[in-house]
Amino acid sequence: MKTVELSVKSFKIISILEAVSFLVLLLIAMPLKYMFEMPQMVQVVGMAHGILFILYLGGAIYMYKKLNWSIGTLFIAVLCSIIPFGPFYVEKKFL
Image (cartoon, rainbow, N blue to C red; front, side, top):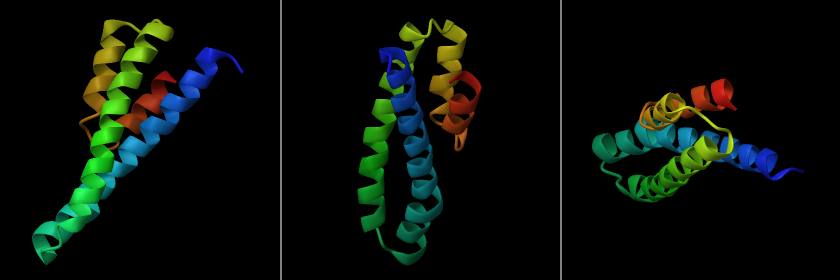
């Protein structure tokens, strides 16, 4: 398998995991913390999401270089990292 294909496949996986972790954080962990006084889930999911978020941003920059994305495409990919379901859009549209 070519290096670029492997890089795209890895970024797709990171993108999906980052989006899912963000949704779990927003829709499950945060309500548990504030409605039921159970902050443990936010600590675990928050840490995982933070790591995946950093990997996603690094991967977006790497894809920018490897796939010759325009600066606008990179901007959209980075912007989508802070929008729920955004990484799913990037994964489908640009990869």
